[in-house]
Length: 240
Image (cartoon, rainbow, N blue to C red; front, side, top):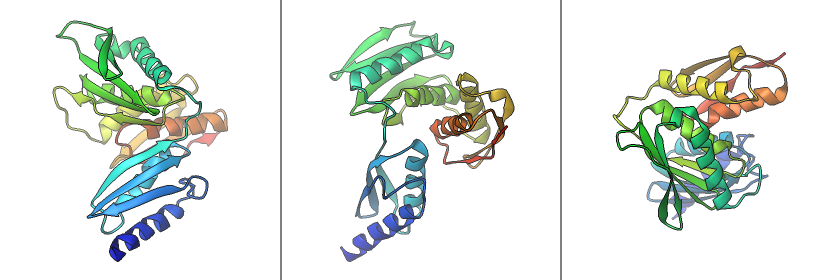
């Protein structure tokens, strides 16, 4: 028991040292048992969530993490409204024109758009307490990642759990991440992607280039953080 308490204390001490997590603004609850750490609470942004998980996972004694961290939503929205917004974005995105889109309402799947069984894929959307869960299948890792980012873009989303299966399976790597980040930046109407360079090493994304204003710089970084499996973002974008 004492050892468990020491590990929790060590985790909270590490999290407190990272200013982006903002432990004093948004306290995080940590529970530890038999190598498994549970983190619960809310943070300001997806960067804080991912940093908290990475830092906590590096603490000696922590072999697995149960993630119950949510991001403070930009706007208060009911689950049904979030679900509708996510499905609308998927339908409007040309990449998913040949995808079936379904939503889960009160435990039952409802079809929003059905295409042929031989189609590129199918995405199922479920929302519970602001957390969006995506399931189904996608034709590529880029499509899987783009679907996740679209879900994050809905202002009421507190979390996005991307369980979409890639069929046929693909080997993930840094180049796949770069491709996805570039596509996301190009689709963000508030970012001039032509002036931003993207590189990645060991799932750490580096952004270079110029932005017209600080908000554009921030939004480009947020887009990179939203991408599935991105562990860190180094933002070297300079405001013109």
